Length: 113
Length: 111
Image (cartoon, rainbow over all chains, first blue to last red; front, side, top):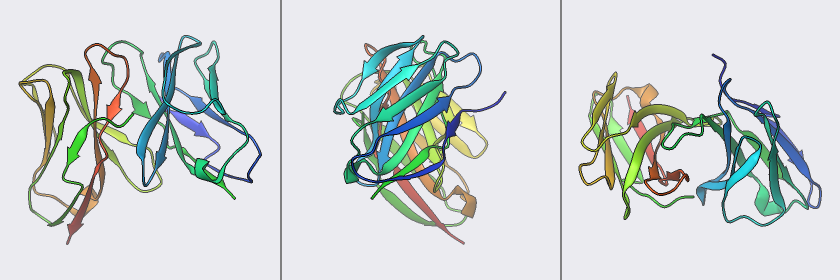
């Protein structure tokens, strides 16, 4: 069974631009969660999508948004990029059932200059 | 988000030594997970725990779901250089779908 894939793996953007990241979950998984990881803040939860609906949301500004498609693939968008948005963005796939394990993708390393 | 207390923050050990790390929470959890992350990669799931008192092994790794349901422990026996990485605990509260993460334990193994 193929694992979680994320594209692109690396991205360099300038302040003010926007970016879209993609995540394909494990086949059969209906939940995709997004996290931001930085050295100083660790893993911070952005949001979770389940069956095309946002089910949970972390404490991030509205510049961070996402969506999920009918095939469970998910995209995350960040608008008006700031230097502080530089981070490793990870998505995690699960069945979506209570207590289910999350499996992470390799991440997208975003650098904002 | 990050709401678990994980300790220690870092460990420097000699190859062959055993390692212990733990994670605590102020609330009761239904699930405890342990991950390992290497540089430039996403966290990889090592062990999943679902019942209080459960003890599960994965090779040289052993993890336990605390009896109080508010803590979990990970032990690595006879460490080797490839054990180097950051180990994260994660847990799901019983009344919430959120997955909470610890800050990680950075493990360095000296040959």
